[in-house]
Length: 408
Image (tube, rainbow, N blue to C red; front, side, top):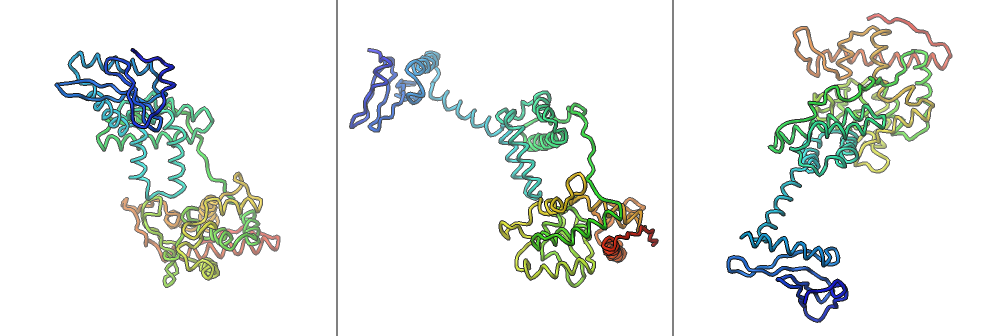
């Protein structure tokens, strides 16, 4: 007699596993622990076989009978339903390994290890928040440009135009990795040129007025935060390197004999080693901090532990505490401050300034300068810049900032 839904529901476990037949080889296996499994016993090529059809109650009696019938239909066609199941499992595994999410996570592990912590965090967030929900389970080779655009439009609809463009670039890197590893034929992100709204070019807010800069320097000198954050804050205008490079400064990178900070290529945006001559003021600040953090790796260790460097918000928060919000001055803005005043007020050569900013600079023959180019001149420029800042600070304290043109 076929089983009823009530019999299946109320089937009690016994000391040994027992089978409750439904007919045609389909039965319910009740284990001593109460677990209930649907099984189909059949013969193929003279051999007795067993096919698992699911677990009760996730698979009801009706669903088990439907699966049983599909298996019998295969058998009637001379096809082993057990082998079909194996192929289906293998296909699902392959599809999973070639899904957008699987390839993207593989790309992230392979290619993002050398990037900064903030860049890795932002990239992974874009993948998990914006791309995986829409495209993650899809086979990467079958994703079309319109599908990718639909995912990017959702970012755009939040008003996050720049984020949409960055996410498109990330998606393109994933697709190109898939092409390189033989799991896709092409990168559909290339078809989306001009499809997204243009992002307004944003410049990091920066103070370039000497009088206002002098007042900022006075305020910075009076900052009452931790010695680590204060030193990072005070070095920011003196060194005018990228905020991520400053906060990740390591004691091993300080060449005390040559009075310079030697940044390895893997930590630089342009992936080229960079030298920052250290003026007397910068050396003094580092010497004061060394007894506090000199035993560790980082010059500016995180308050959460010396194994990582200061948070990207450390100097930014210090500026806010002093009354300078993101629309007035940012840590990155010190670069624009130095670029403007070194050129327009102090009159230093633009190629020296650009080289010290670690921008790509080429000579008259189109060859890139190496890291030691004009090093003596750049060292003199950095000391002149530090002395100029001290002068602005002194005049701001006296309430009498004089703007002068310093010739070279």
